[in-house]
Image (cartoon, rainbow, N blue to C red; front, top):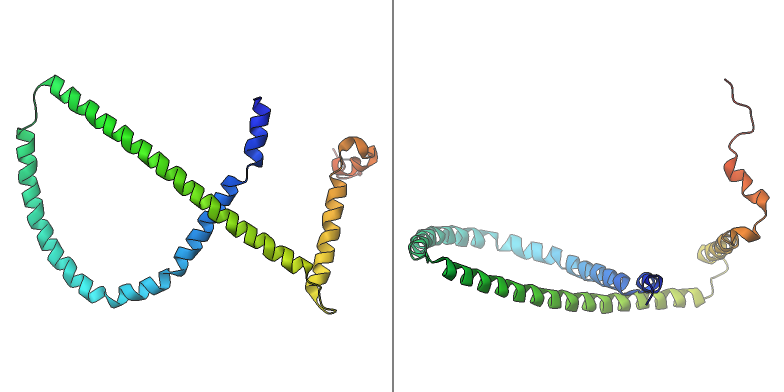
Length: 184
């Protein structure tokens, strides 16, 4: 497949836009929940402070225990280079596996967001089509605005004709700024 065909396919694929719309919708949904969560957090603040003080004391004890375990682990480190290489390779393979898992999960989330975005865009398009089909009232300004917008859009389409079909005189006003001679 030629590169230009792949480029056209990439530019015309709406999936990234759907994923973006889905992510925006998800963010909006989550942000609507924030005020209620803030109120709940404010109510639980005093109990949380007491729990945090107890947890801090427990963390101090756990830190001392962890330091002892680290000291034991350092003492038990293998000194054989081949053993270290084998463990390093095993660790690297585990990380490759995790990276692949994350890539699969990221693709799944991307696809879910694209589906969600497509629903949002389709709903918005249906709403726009429904509002466009409705007849404006006699004194309704939105109907007049829609007519003006359509006229403006038609003018833009007319202005975007290929350069070969435009007369040469229409290009000249853009290049000219002033007809007065320059003072030296």
